[in-house]
Image (cartoon, rainbow, N blue to C red; front, side, top):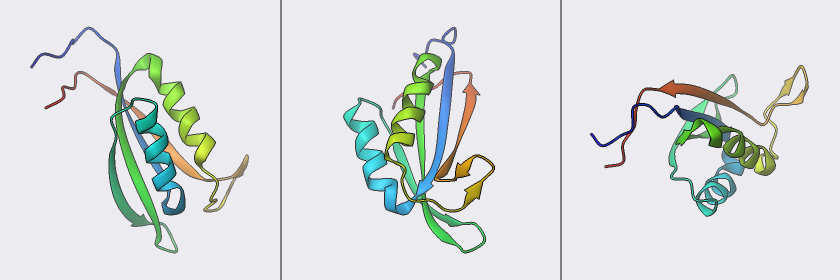
Length: 99
């Protein structure tokens, strides 16, 4: 494996409304990110969603989240701070490598 184990890397999991999924994926790819999309279904009303997985350096996490936030317009409910358009999980990874 040719990965740099000293680099601080993250895996961003983003669950977005299916109506925002195409635009979200296109926005990330246009910005140069490699993205894996998995269509999914869940929640109380079984609404359609898409899960994006993006492996990035720690310095790119905020940019990925901002790009997703900028295209997420279809709310799926209310959160304590307003409309909930999706959710993002950022996970530390020891290494990743492109095949």
